[in-house]
Image (tube, rainbow, N blue to C red; front, side, top):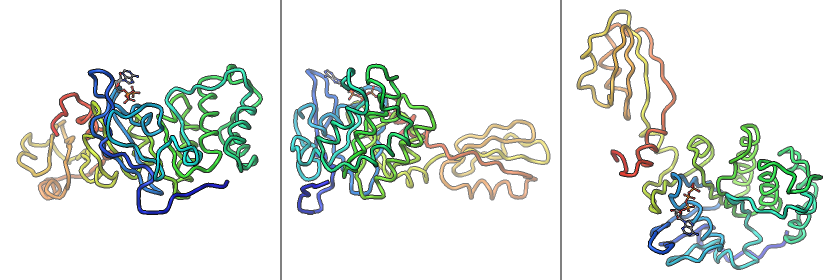
Length: 306
Ligand SMILES: Nc1ncnc2c1ncn2[C@@H]1O[C@H](COP(=O)(O)OP(=O)(O)OP(=O)(O)O)[C@@H](O)[C@H]1O
């Protein structure tokens, strides 16, 4: 499609600066700074009411910021030429219930211009969407698929996705994540909000955690993984002394159960391995690194231990 691209001055496609949104006495988003670069997927996480949707709605120009700015492609979403380069899936999918899905998709395609009908058909096939049905007759999940097809059909430069996989079965969730990855490979900037750490962990390059409107943590998945706790099961040839792991660096907890010790380690396992190396350890089972622990701390109202 024909697009008017702003001069590339290095401004990130999504550029939120000191964004604040108040609803009466409630501060839903508080001086938020957040950027997403080309070819980057940013996962926005947070518990209910954290301000994820409000941030996204301000970015899309659906609500006015109280202060600060929510920049999109060098301008704002209210500039229709820029808006046409954005794909958006909202938390609440509101579509014209009387129209057949195909008609609605055609309407979106005409609005944007230059959309390849074969690409739209391919998207519908990938998501198993029956486009002959009226929107009002579709299940919630199928309406979500219509919203996803319209968001991806014009190969947008920016994707703003507010919990896009809610209501979809696991296979379709995976397909949506594949679509997002494909857009990233084309240089698209993606802001992806979710409650679900595993899906964001799987796909995002960076994550931010909002709590009560404040970005309490922002990091790459790689560095979060580095500090993630590891859960190990050490199996010994004999009963284990209860104080075997006392004072070992990095051991957050150790639970002795006969010949087995269940250990949680923060950071490196080297000190632990040194301690057990000559104590008759037969087998070490490593469970997946657990980013959830980090996130649960942040999700707690008091900020947990961090
Ligand atoms: N239009 C509105 N008027 C008044 N308060 C609002 C409005 N929209 C959102 N809020 C409040 O702002 C806060 C942030 O809500 P928001 O929907 O942005 O959170 P969220 O992180 O998207 O939550 P969820 O995951 O539950 O969708 C909440 O306390 C919510 O009640």
